[in-house]
Structures are given as structure tokens and as C-alpha cells.
Length: 276
Image (tube, rainbow, N blue to C red; front, side):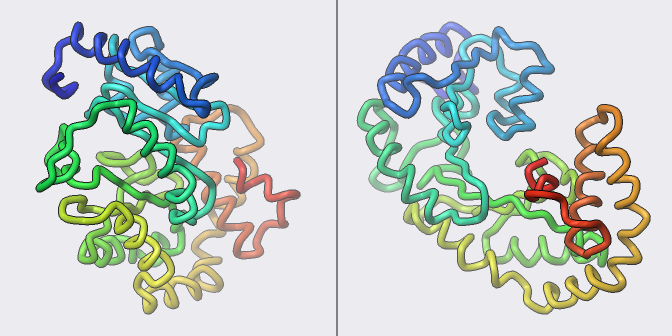
């Protein structure tokens, strides 16, 4: 079957009908929520996208494309996005290795049920040349207001690019950062073992550029407090006020979180600001 980018609607529908029952056979997704992109309104798609369950590309699809997600929203399978299948496993925190160990056995069992195109020379064949090889993207989400305050975020991004790590916006490729949230992920797949994707993140997650990290913390503490002060009071007032557009709400929540971390705002009970 052709990849979704070259397939017609009837071919996408045929693939959809074949894949959904196979995925439903697994206990993890047996009672999962099935979302047909052809039957969803734009605002519903936007909601799923903001929850990182679907991509911008899938939100623009219609009949023959969709999402199957488990009840805890820790495993989501996009069908007929850029590829026939895109499996996403998620968890709080930055422990990519634990996530890999938890879901790799399930992914391997699923591969036995779905015939996947594989080349002994190139690896997994993908709808996009950039993804040929492991087909794996390991990502972590980082809140980096300090680097924005001292205007070092571009320099850090360039440094990460040199070690084959990509920095994207909040909603992934082609999007801007909102609320000072950035997605950092491996940039290459070809010629690598699948484990290398998360190993690269583990190796650079805490190391980064130590000089800039050390410079960012004083800015967060002293100079940063002065810079952040105009933002967090409005953030504290507005979050409890009327409904706001997503981008503005995230920026205000970022200012509020920074105020809490700098000791400028009292600690929220049970870390409520973190969950929001």
C-alpha cells in the first residue's frame, strides 16, 4: 500500500479498516478511544493537538485517518498521518530510558501483527527520508524561561544541533515555543540502533552547555527576578480569571511557574501550578 502522502482517500480508508482491528487486539488499546479525523470538528482536533495526542499534520487529515489512544493517554497511535502508523508513548518527567523499556516489548508484539516495510541495508522504510532507519524519535519537553531571559536560547539551540539534537516548539516540528516550552529530540535515525535515540538525550539532558547553565541560574535568581517581576503578578491574576487563548495562557502560566521557582510567589499547594 502507498504511504498516506501518495494514497487516495479510498486507499487510506482500506488501511484504516485493516489496522484498527489489529491494534484493538492488544490489551492496552482494547478499550481505547478511537478518533476518526473525518468526523471531528476543528476545535476538537485542536484540543487533541494541544494534549500532544495528534500532530498538526494529522489534524489536517480527514476520512481514513485518525487516532487510537489508551485510557490513561500514555500510548497513542496515529493512523495515516505521514506514515501508516505512528506510535507515541508518553510519561511525565525526563526518564526516556524507562519509557523505552516499558513500551518496546508492546511495540515488538504489534510489529508481528502488522507487516512493516524493512530493509536489511536501510532499516525501516518511512514516508519521509529523514525518518528512514530506526524510525524512532525520542523527545523531552523543557521549560526554559531563564535562557530566554538572558537571551541565550538561540546559542543553546545551535549547540544542540551540533550534537544531532533538534529543538522544536511546544507542538513539535514547524511550531513556535509557547510558555517557554521546548521539545528536544534526536535529529538522525539512519545507521543507528534504536536505543541510541534515547541514549543521546540521556547523555545531553543534564550536561548541555554547563557554562550557559551556570550563567542562567544567577539570572533566574537575582537579575532574572527583576526581569520576571513584571510578568508573574499578571500571570497569577489572569490564570484565575476568564478563559484565555492557549498561547497567552501558557505564557502567563510560565511566568507564574518562574515566580514560584524564584521564591517570588508562595508555593502552590500540592504543586497545582505544575499540573496546570
